[in-house]
Image (cartoon, each protein chain N blue to C red):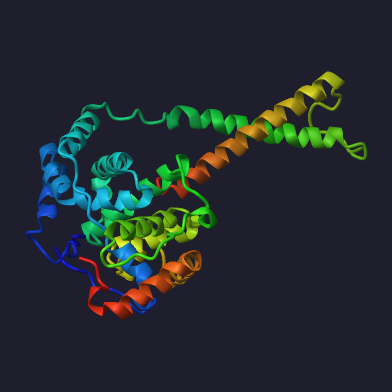
Length: 131
Length: 206
């Protein structure tokens, strides 16, 4: 057991230091070691986690993203009253069509935000294999 | 109390390294040696985070299992102890964030009433216990530096490494935390000063 160097420069050793630095050490209970090893063995025996099927999912995600972008552009063009220019596609949308597009764009937007937040959380957790 | 292993590259016969190599080669049983060597420090560290014996053991167990899972990710740039303590601190921190210990706000932490004397060890234990429990009532940003600083036997750099925080930040937070504790326990400060004057050789506990 090495005793590490103490840093007294933070403040002089005072009563609070003495109280907090001196505590009776706890001894592990008799079954602790066995319990940890049992947990480790269970972990080892568990099947490895199934990797996420990125190869199958990515084309779908890309397709959804593309459609979402297209839908958003179309909605913006047709939805704006001042947009009097010629549209490239779907020039005459019915009210129901516009509503469907709007709903689809919201869903796509939500999916995009979810994906971004998931990627961000993975990155923050330091386990990102994507970013 | 704390065993600090040397840097991974310094000691070729470091028992931790030997056991880790065996674990990574598939010998699960070799992990027992690691647990045996580090169980007391990890339980004591967890105890300082929660002051609950049963929970401290649960937290330490969880830390060991995480360590087992992540053993291959240890890059051996720092000592095994540094890596293990940092991992354990993460486990304890996130668990206590999800299930906080029931603690009073700092202002409500009871202050010892009577002056402890040399012969009144029970009273002294009570007052010391109040100070220790008050640490858990500190705001979270100050609590963990205090916990780790004293766990590491007042080794500021070890505590900073465990928290993954610059030493300067650690020092500032510690100073603030201790100021909060002093403000909360002014009577204790005065009493201890008096005790020191009366019995200067008994200042340091066993």
